[in-house]
Length: 116
Image (cartoon, rainbow, N blue to C red; front, side, top):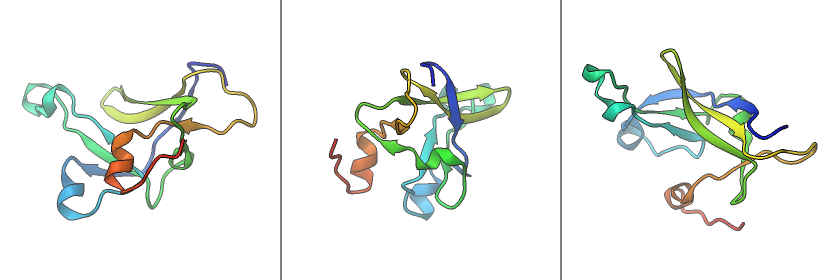
């Protein structure tokens, strides 16, 4: 897979911003899609939301963490559809595991430690 190649999009249940904190514990399979323009829909912005792949989703929910990952995640928008997409950060060789950097917040939020 050559650097810059789009690999996958993250699929799952769409949860409105803030609902995870109110109604349930944040899932280990949850990705945040940030608000656009402060989330002010009156001014053309869009609120943030979470995509939770805990119960269903695509292959992207199985990508593992690495402090030196070979992919990057980025919020994207096509028309009015917003999503998280994964792109090769460098050339990835056949047989190499696809990895992401989950971020320090992930480990803190779930009481885990990174062992990279």
